[in-house]
Length: 123
Image 1 (cartoon, rainbow, N blue to C red):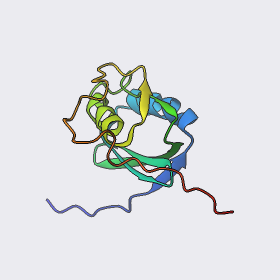
Image 2 (image 1 turned 135 degrees about the vertical axis):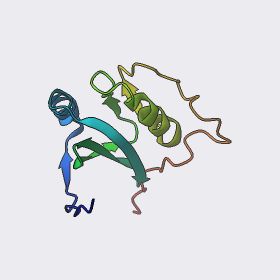
Image 3 (image 1 turned 45 degrees about the horizontal axis):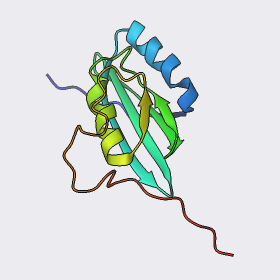
């Protein structure tokens, strides 16, 4: 079967809207596909992807590295894997994480190796 692929859109949302979106998607029958992250200048960008019948929905959430983010594991239990990974690699804390490895999901040679610090302003 040949299937054409649609253009993937990424919608930027506030971290405060994340749980509302996750609940809507869970109730709509979507599954959590991945959460990936990157860090620059003391901020972490997380990309949440969800799928239903090969239709992807992607949300970008930007947070300061010291901010705590609500876990989506209350709606998507399997997201504990992604959230523990983001915690260990980038230092993002998740509230209400259903299975929290508390920074021990990976055995790392340094704590939060991919977390960046905010640039200092030159005066």
